[in-house]
Amino acid sequence: MPVHLFDRAVPERLPIGGGRMLTAHPSDGRHRAILAPVDPVALLLRHRTEIERLRIGVGSRRLFERRIMPMLIGWAAMVQSLPRDARGLWSGADGLFEAGLAFASGALAAADARVLEPDMPPAERAEWTDRVRTAAVAAGLLSDVRRLAALNLCAGTENAGDGGFSVLETFSPGEETALAFAVRHAGRVMRLERRTPAETAGRLPAVSADVLRLVVPDGILRWLGSAERRNGETVLSALKSALVYTTGSTETERLLAESAARGREWAVNRRATAAARREGRSPLLRGFAEVWECEVARRVFAGLWPLNTSSSPVVWAEDGIALRWPEAFASVAADADDAWLFREVPDEADTAAEILLTAGTVLPTETGSPVWQSLSADGTPDGRTWLRLPDGERLVSLARRAADKAGAVLPAREAPLFRLRPGDEAPEGRPGWVPSLPASCEGTETGEALAAAVREISRLGSGEVLLTEAGLFIPEVLLPDDFAVQPDTVQCFVARSGGQLPLVRFERHSVRRRARVPPATAVLAAVFTPERRLPPGRKPDEGLVLEGAVLRPTLVRPVTFWPDGSVSEREWPRPEYLLELIDTLPEEESL
Image (cartoon, rainbow, N blue to C red; front, side, top):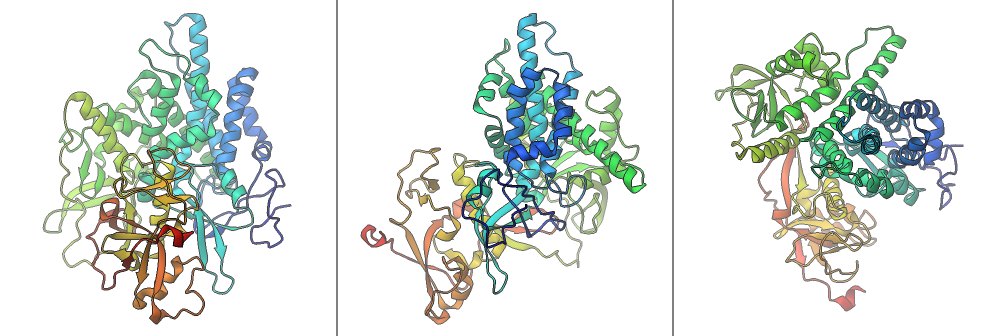
């Protein structure tokens, strides 16, 4: 029987395989209760038909049971019963898991259509082929990491009085599986939100590599890396590159990236066709978006589409990456017949743009259209039309690698393309904050926890309340129990269990910074106390003292989140009230 986390009768420790516990369908994509956890084997049994289809595609029972099945169990633990979409093809319970199975089957079929290393000796070729086929399954299975990174699963408590929700911890797929998160927080209320494309884009590269490590067992990773080509490349190194960049510089990297894209195209079109038949309408070639992304990445990485040149449709401006439209579509469509990647391409650029918008590949305008119109300096339309990309930084990183290979440098950004017309009111933006961590912290357990704390401050709209002269104050209640503050010389948060950096660690309640909140903002800041309200007996006119740490201005940036999903920089705020930093607690007082 399903166990609902609102039920007070839930035992303190739920057995992992204790029952059929499903995920609620988040039809609006926000703030819906989640039911968890679920035994990974139960997920496999629920989808035995799809798994049997994959087993038949693998052919070798030994390869399937020793290499493929452990990855499927790892994927089931990672995604649990989470939905893939707020609405659409895989929007129900088990959506992410079911989509991963379909993508894996398609990627394997696409890889099997290629002739692998014909010049290798037969024995070496057989070993290499087994590893490539296994990696193709992994590439398809994990190609949905972007969707997983877009989900914001939080565990917390709900106030029965006002219905408010207090976040205790946010699930981070780069640190643990959803199963581990759900078991640790069994009995608590869980809520699901969906991050904007702009919030998700910066998380993807690091998360892809970390999810690979968590889903694929160490023994299989070592096996994938145990055979080398003459140039020193391994299947494991090719798989990592294909997952992070969706393209590659070597034949194996491109094979895995393109097989994953082809597999996604096949699975999406198959699912969309079945849905269209049930609803009595014509199917749309939605899988085109999956291969489109891979082709754009390939062209940028290969130097065929450099940034900001007259021969390329890719423009890097101060307001992001945009593609000239329909020029970009015409260029791809003209070569599609000669490209192994494409099976079908829409006939019209307008149809292609709608498909890309439906898949979340491009940003919509305020009216919901996929096509943007750029404006001249005087605010009038300049006759150019564009598609805006939410994940522009990934293309910039590919362009940077292409430029380095060619001994060139990236061009300067162009002026903003999408200025407001004179007299138009600016769309309402939401002020917030994003971390700006040292490179050594990005993608680590430390960085993810810090980013989660900053996101929660932005979500609550309380950033202005937490400003000090030294920077943004991070209340202790937003950080995991095992976190401490690194000495000022490093200017970073560290975890006692992290191990990514040389650390001098402090216990949680030893030397910490405190901040005195002025009476004028005490009520607003009370949400960051352990009780999530003013302590008993404390009045707003008496102020408040919070315990936590300070992020210097170099480690956090004030930004504005816009309705279209874009993010722009803003100046450091100058609020009327600042938190006053109190001297650090003497160690003997804090114990």
